[in-house]
Length: 454
Image 1 (cartoon, rainbow, N blue to C red):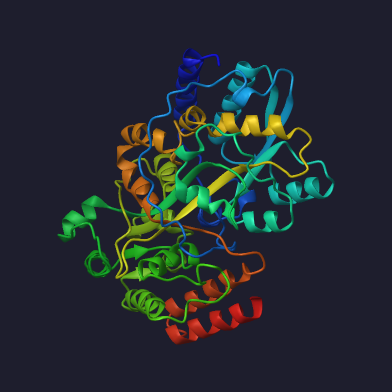
Image 2 (image 1 turned 120 degrees about the vertical axis):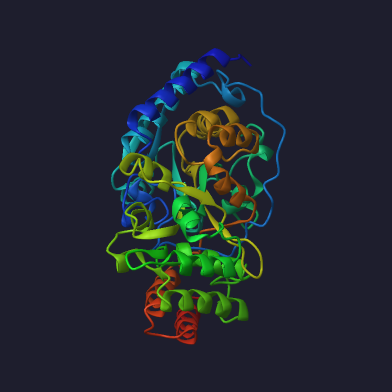
């Protein structure tokens, strides 16, 4: 296989310059447009608040793997690509992200002689569904982890064939698990994000508060940081944030196999009551309650001293609030230990693909160690391969807490037909934190919905 170190280095430099010129604004959005709060057709790399979620199944540590030193190849996995017309579909995102992926695709063409292109789709879900129904899908396309069960159930996705991906064991096991259903692996992740605790170091220092590492410390910090014009903690009143506290209490909305509601448990009661008490005391508030749209804006505006968000907040802060001081820590541990979400997207190949071998070779190029390094060199999303982690952390030391969360992150995914239970949880959680219902009321409502759906 031919080596392309010079071209790879040139690509990395080019992408870094492009990202810098665009201001790292790939996640410059509001609450209903943030990567973890929107459906995949909004151009983000994380599940929507109105999309499915699943049991905290990502329990395998993401251990370091040997470095993958092989450069990109002219013909990935020995497939002839010269002259091949290939298209990858994704959702329309920021100019910087679109430019970066286009540059990586252009490098693929230069290395292989293929004629590949990236075609962002403004209405991604509708466009993909229409293409699949018509039997004319793109060669590869984004698959949000929350959408995976539906695509698998419909038979739209081809499993990953043996031997088509370079060093698949280098991909974090937890991320592979997210895109595995009933023992079948369907697609490799292009990157991932987790939740962390974003805080104002100056505010903590002024209040004499250490960075919280436990629930008790978080509640105490939120109280100490709350003033007449600032709340201690603000985060979206939804499962995609509050669910992390369920994980930290050793539970989730559903059981691990997705066949029953798990919310009627002591752990869930502890987590929900803990949050209800913090909101009732006035030390925590939803972003909307303090006249902001999402957690990032609540923090950036100074209306909150802490928020719970993913690494996409960094691009938002850098682009819109460059003078706002911030730092990131892992989410505080609960009585059962740590917990956070892994939000991730993979490259899928349709079961009806016209050129599956060439499609998978394209996927391999984009998700290889070199492709992952190039793709994440100018963004706050994290590479899905262990061999790339050390360099990424060295380049982004202030974001190391997000990477640490990957070792215990849980998937954001519900089984097919059960996704509506998340909306029921969200609706009742919002009532819980305003004091309109009790924890028992919330559990009963979600359990009833689960019985109907399951």
